[in-house]
Amino acid sequence: MSLVNPPIVSPPIRYQAVSLPLCHNFGIQLSILRLDETHPHISGNKWYKLQPALAEARRHPGRPILSFGGAFSNHIHALAYAGQESGIATIGVIRGEATSASNPTLQDAQRWGMRLVFVSRKDYARRYDPIFIDTLHQTLGDFQWVPEGGSSAAAIQSCGDIWSALSASDVPLDYLFCAAGTGATAAGLIAARPASVKVFVVPALKISVAEVESMLQAHWAAAGFLQPDGYQVLPGCLPYARLSPELAALWWQLSACYGVDLDPVYTLRVFHQLSRLILQRRFKPGTHVALLHTGGMQGLRGHADRLRRMAPAFYGPLPL
Image: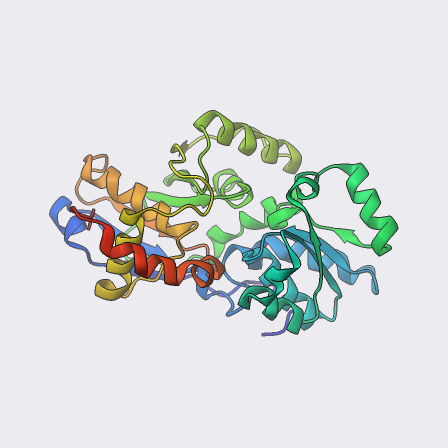
């Protein structure tokens, strides 16, 4: 699917009904919103977050897009492919050593024409520092800067369009669960949510509710939104990309027994929190709850072997 002339309306997002004993026992209808099916490489929320950046790049032919990410960054992977399809040069500033270039995510990015620039963790921490960005301009020439994760003000507004792409559901949706990394997707969803739907935000890193609230409010201010309501932030329980035997076992059971493939960095954590709330009887029988599969399976490419090794180490009941 080429983005040279992107569709005005994004592909519809389907509801995938998931039948688990947990949901049957508590009378809950659970769906996964398959945003990951939007595009095979520009996966999930990246489709929406990159559209404004690509549109801006087309207005300035010859100027590359530069952005930031880790060695298994979904954003870097999607941006590299989108750039190739659009005829736009891309530069990825990668946290870590150049030896990471041998991993499959960055190999894809290079194959799609992205120039990789590796920086230390100390320098990467300056990715929002105008002085550091100016230093990159001096080294790399002119470029269009796109924040880490593609989380610009325009991208936040674009993520609100996810609601209009949802396919029709036989049962009205009551609650939507969404992961938060930079928080841009969650901010856009909350700002544009239908009045009948409450959004739960699950951080992908160990961070307080107050810190997530501050992040969301900064996004809304940048995008020109008033303080919205109708949402709840849940606490982050594990550091970014950190795994546990319970999460590994949950991933394996969902994949092997129910055909549900979730990435371990974002959506697996969302499912874990969602299932715990069901066990706590937070939702009355007949409620329709959906997990937004935000796509981006690069984390699974980086952790699949470790997940398989860790899963047997967990002993105990799983929230299924």
